[in-house]
Length: 191
Image 1 (tube, rainbow, N blue to C red):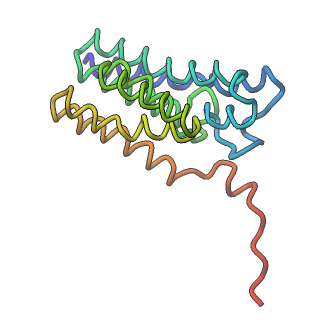
Image 2 (tube, one colour):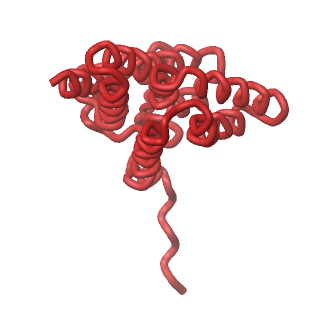
């Protein structure tokens, strides 16, 4: 029962459209700009780093809080259920018309709850890579390294569960029909 409660609470937390609110505060509608995604990355591209920071922190906080609540309700697997719920809530938000988001930052926050040591190493990798190259590459390095670092810190079942969460992000990229289709120019007719 604790898993179900964790997943539902996580879904409700994940459904809070933090990045949309942050962008609207600055007069930007994320549905209509950039890639049409309602998350922190589109906010970064539209607002710049300083103004988008609350969107990143808010989207990550959804996963972190959901994970911590789940951990307190039903141990590690309850934390996993909470993070999964938060990611699904971010992807298909109850409070924002069920429009697809990617849940990447929600995953990052959830990783802090589920595997703090691996998350700390990956945050350091993100920072170092960002300083050398750019935040775009730093963020990717930190997220993609997470299950590999986790192999040294957690049981293999937890690493496999992290793989499920990362696969969800990949699936959301495949399902994305947000702004790309809307903003892409029509192809010229064949000659």
